Length: 194
Image (cartoon, rainbow, N blue to C red; front, side):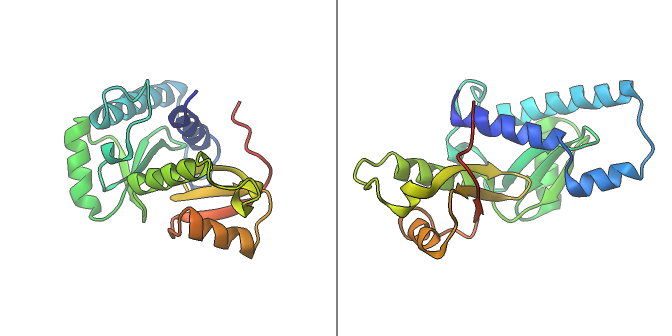
């Protein structure tokens, strides 16, 4: 299972689980019928697939290169109301029109974000290159403390999981891997991707 599918599964699972601000909004609304919910899921899934197809025709088989994603694209998920949400960087109205043309539909939401998915995937590539570099010593603080990383569409950050978060490890990461402001660090255990 490649990294793209792992990230896609994580993003979809996160989008279908409770998301703080969306769950609160949904609690105050009237419940929808199961038919409406199913229709929304089906339509949102089709829109998601159409959007991904516009980036790369074989996205189901392999992770598209980071430059396959438009610079304005910040990520995509299905919200708690089963509506497709596309995060965009920059001019939201302009990009919404572009997305409506691609999707041949207006039945989706947009929200502004700071970092593009392309930028987040480039950081993920930098992490992969660092971790697979045989010249990096095993005792390197990042190697010793790395627990995993993911491009988190909801947080609009690359979340790096470290076994221990401290100034030494963060400094080493910023010096040797990436010093992007799009990276956030959390302390935890090794990420289980099985």
